[in-house]
Length: 100
Image 1 (spheres, rainbow, N blue to C red):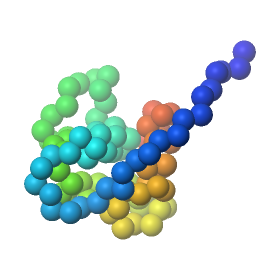
Image 2 (cartoon, rainbow, N blue to C red):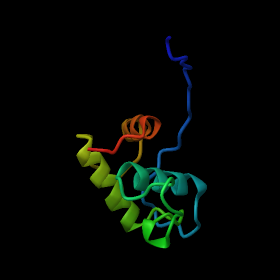
Image 3 (cartoon, rainbow, N blue to C red):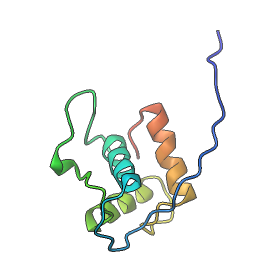
């Protein structure tokens, strides 16, 4: 039996470090996804901790995590979460696969 599939179109904001001190829901989602696909966190095993780095601020730690993810996926390492980085991140997210 074939698995049903659906095509989805998303409009995602390009995210990058900008010094904003106001937490963002979009950045929180990015941070959560990065923690999950890095293998450092599983929502099936425990609740989020402050050390997981999900605070909604795109600071130096998030920038470093984005760059590490980009390098592990052989993407341009620029710290900017644009089309290619979002696509790679979502590919891992939707298949529950660890990056790299």
